[in-house]
Image (tube, rainbow, N blue to C red; front, side):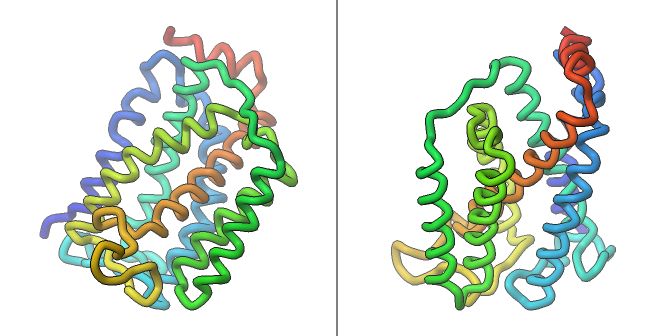
Length: 243
């Protein structure tokens, strides 16, 4: 049996893990903040994943998976919520090292409008389970960030992190959905005939919103612990250790 999903998981984390110990900065020094962020946010998204999988919003093709399951999810899917944040936050730390952060010029009104649009969009497609959850998760993140952690929304490197992380997301998600390893219930997502089929190639558009909220929450919690558990002087030294 070919375990394609496991291969993808390994490829996602391979280079960030190898560079964690020998790079321009010592990424392993941030494990104290990284691991709880992965555990807390990952637990929430794994719970979401387990519920919608049991409900039939999406399912997995076990021709490309191992036979190991945890709470109804294949082992490879559980690993996804570990390797993705590990690798994407590595992207963020590279941005922090090479590009001193700057504040964005977006106003609070801009984010309020986005929240309203996400909520209205979710309500408009309330009958599509994945659509409403994906859009509402984006609204929830922006609401929490605007209310309690506005500094992340003002960070240029946060938006660069999201934009750059979308590149590997498209590559790997395309492989997952085109193989196909993950299949979706047409009733749970956007879709249709002809030019509009609710997908970017084979990737449901909802996946982009799901990915945005997931990566955002991972980084928000990571930044929270990094700020409180890693002293600024230690952090600065860690960045320069392998310069």
